[in-house]
Image 1 (cartoon, rainbow, N blue to C red):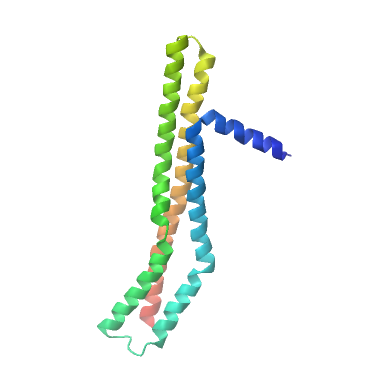
Image 2 (spheres, rainbow, N blue to C red):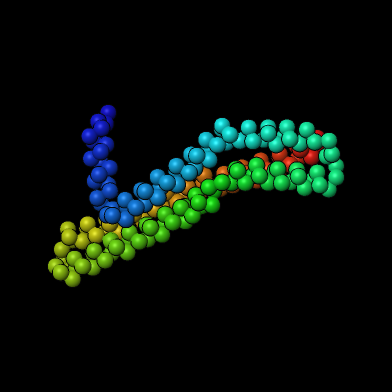
Length: 174
């Protein structure tokens, strides 16, 4: 079983092997997953209340067939869908940022490799290994973070679309 000190040491070594860009990627991933979890928390806790409030407002209306009533229904459904989509564009931006930061890590790591080659020649493989590590680890971390965030951002977007259609259909039947 892993001890806390072992976990800390492994994480510290991983962050050091990737360089300062990896710390930035970690911050972006933390923010991205905070926003993703917030969206799911809203779905589990607040979304049903918003839908019930919209349904109650619609049921309280006497006129449900005029053009104005349909516009009011569309506006209410739009508000609920907008509340579902809140922070999804920010999540998508952070997802797109992760591979770019990984690429930045690749460039800075390769610059380190070239500096070592310029100073000590191309025969010093140990000195170049640190730069190669700083070039590959952030790239891998950025891609893994982007893939995981992309999967959940697409799920959130599709959920908002299907939920909007479901609500509009439900209110249309009333």
